[in-house]
Amino acid sequence: MVLLRPVILALVLVGALASPATAQAVGASLSVSDATVTEGNAGPTTANFTVTVQPTLVPVTFKYDTEDGIATQPDDYAPASGMRTFPADPMDAQTITVPVTVNGDTLAELNETFKLKLPNSVGGTITDGEGIGTILDDDNQPPTARVDVNPQRAFVGKVIEFNGSRSSDPENQRLQYFWDLDANGSFETPTGTEQAIGFAFFTTGVQAVGLRVTDPGLKSGSAAGYALIFPPPPGFGRDTTPPSTNLFPVRRSLKLALRRGIRVRYGCSEACLIAGSVGVDRRTGRRIGLKGRNRTMGRAFTATTKAGSKVLTLKLSRRARRALAKVKKVRVNLRFKVRDAAFNVRVTNHRITLKR
Image 1 (tube, one colour):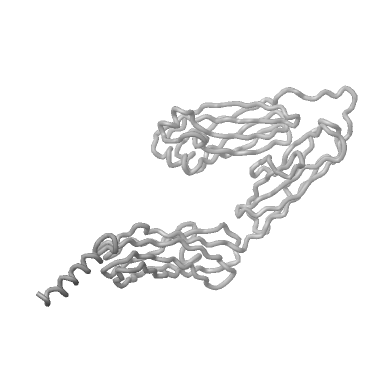
Image 2 (tube, rainbow, N blue to C red):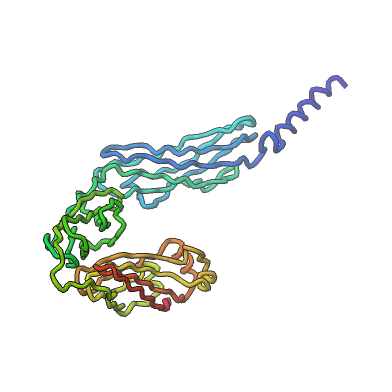
């Protein structure tokens, strides 16, 4: 009987260690972290992913592979794959660092991502098998804003062109234009990639319009243009009539809209700010799984400095593209809000059906 007691005690201890309260005998959970690294200008840097396993009574082996995202191998990073093993440890969680080499360069780019994936394991259960590697670009330089004003002297109510076409970006990236028409520093009027805007003042004296240009990496530069405004001539009357507008025929391919957005040409009878949006009504939104603000699927902005037309591309949000990928046709509403230089507003709505 005395000899049996140590054996019984050992069996009790093994049962305790194998119980869920202390450790998993088989199937200890595995997860991989995200990793972020600054690219650098030359030579390699390392993105370190951390793989963690919970306490386990058996060794756990996992396989790992890299997968391209915006970043591609071998230009942006070196491919990595292999197998690693955690020893059995019923008491503590363990970690293993998986390094991935990132290649530096002096090209101005957006921040890029790739993945480290755990496709399978032996002895463990993968609960989070995808780590996102983010390569932060450190080469992008801010753009320079420049505003030209024509004419620089004008009467109250006269449309003046503020032109930012001489703004520049060191990496020649396409810029987005935002205007501060009331000189409060908020740059509340976007015109997308349209470089000029027509605007009229109704207060005399030196007046300013600010411009902020932003590159794809969200670096920005700002400047201001100035005009001297004189009292109106005799007989001046402020315009109170909203501008006339015109929507040109729209291509109604759902497949093209998903890939490139909805491209529209919109006309205005005078200098205008044009804000366009595309959305679905509540009933259609319920049918395809878009609710609340998500029913507005895309927006675009532009401007004219005189009578004419401009092209807007209403790019659909990622959520909208996922929802519309499931349908063969959908009826959408194109809404345009147009404001002229005298702050008269016209809103128009156009219903069209997109089909595959």
